[in-house]
Amino acid sequence: MNVPVYALESEIPETERFDLIVAWDVFEHIEKTALGALLQSVRPKLTPRGRIIARFPNAGSPFGQFYQWGDTTHVTALTSDSVNQLAFASGLKLLRYGAPCMPVRGIGLARSVRRTMLSAVRALIERFVRFAFFDGRPVPISPNLVVVLEK
Image (tube, rainbow, N blue to C red; front, side):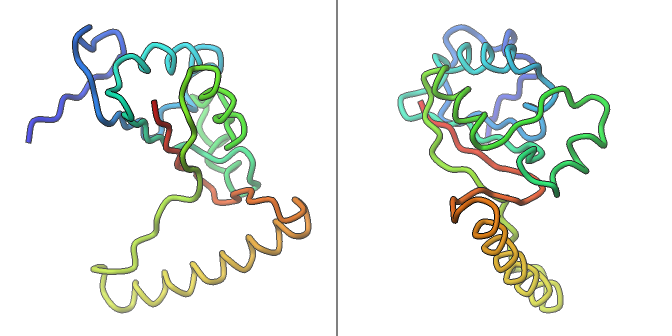
């Protein structure tokens, strides 16, 4: 499988188009205005319905603050709402946002049971926090967020 990898948007050939761009632990290292400009510049490089998948610390959660502020190279704090605003301004659509998936299959019985129990406890805590603080609004409180943006 031939998968091109570019460190900088400026390295991407003008004619190159992508079905998927992945930015894992990248957005939080870019100033917010530059991040908006980056999204605008990569949008034309996506095929129709092409997607961007990104993961970053969840600044909308007290659990994300450890990751956000524990690295001095993090310059932008992002929430699902702020990414939605950046996406909209860039002509992109926010398709999904939420906690990263925590696989429970193919990892051994003990880890599978532990992760299943953790997922259930986290779901209960998240429901309580949403009810108590956000009027039931689906605000993610996971330490990290994964977002899917579409052209």
